[in-house]
Image (tube, rainbow, N blue to C red; front, top):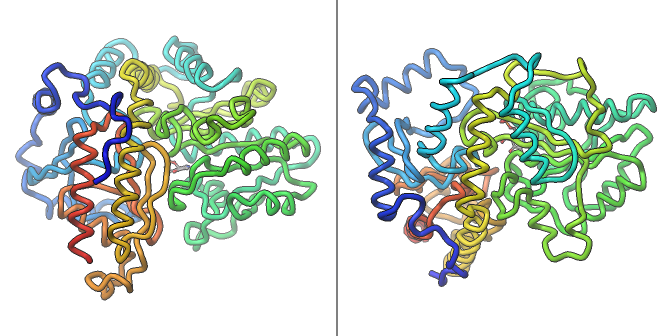
Length: 455
Ligand SMILES: Cc1ncc(COP(=O)(O)O)c(C=O)c1O
């Protein structure tokens, strides 16, 4: 295993005096055991789903009952190290005591008020997000897909008088499951069976600037990309692509929109992935998109979404033009503010960078040692992907009709590690930003053992 890359700022003993074991004990105390009804009852829970829940998800054979820190427990009491983080949501892990306290405290004051009224937490959270980005304004909603919907409406408003409405997005992108979300998403499998598609979206190859220029039409009003494609397989945008898109948008009077739902919120070691990608690049610090969508880690598990709009466009969505009942409630905003406070105080962006760098080089090492199973490692900070070779090349898996990524994730489950498939051949690691070096090493150990069994 490679040596830890500059481990000085990694969180060995996160948060609670007395070290990691003490921290876990502390977490277990505040998370009660599941009631007897659900204990040891995986089958009956699965039956409830089979009978009563719309079967739109392919689920793993796991029913989770509680979590603490970077571990979760299933209903049978089995413990798993969580490298999936609820798909980049559980930014401080599970049952973080400060999130619990913020929830309790705010819920005793004011849970919800309509957006017909002002309240302090929403104003303060918007102020924080603007501080981390640049002058502009924020709209709050409930999910990533809804945050992107806001960006589509912003773009349409922007181009309305000239009759421009078309948004170019990238092939292999993912922007959510609403009708406009699947129209924006550059993956055919997501759209199938839901035609006719919402008009006004076309897809071009990712990281291909000439292709974007060639695809522009008189109706084009905006370009929307992810800084790092998440569902598409952990593919970061290149420096040339980001800077080139900004120049192109300036030249053609287009909005440059970034979907930071998965790659944002300090996951890469900076608030936004484009800030990390452009680090040290001449002119990179000045780069700004015109709109940024956020969700997932923003609420750490409390459902929240938001989009930020750069100053010149911040008032385009005027009173009455957009809204949602639950956007930016006092409760949600109090949680999101607490998360930002903890990330800043505990220097968790640095932790994501250091532990992420260590993980990345450990994964690179595995790829070198086991080329018969692993093809590449990719990603930045704690947004990492491990690409497997084709299923046919791994004898133990070749007979299955499932994707190799799903099969590998299943094997990791058996070994006690949660990860997330991303497309047919890539396994994603999206752990909490407070992942400790010890936990990172434990996870890599599990991955190596699982890979070795497939050689
Ligand atoms: C980049 C990106 N955009 C949008 C979404 C949709 O977010 P939500 O599921 O909260 O609607 C996701 C979800 O995975 C995502 O990864």
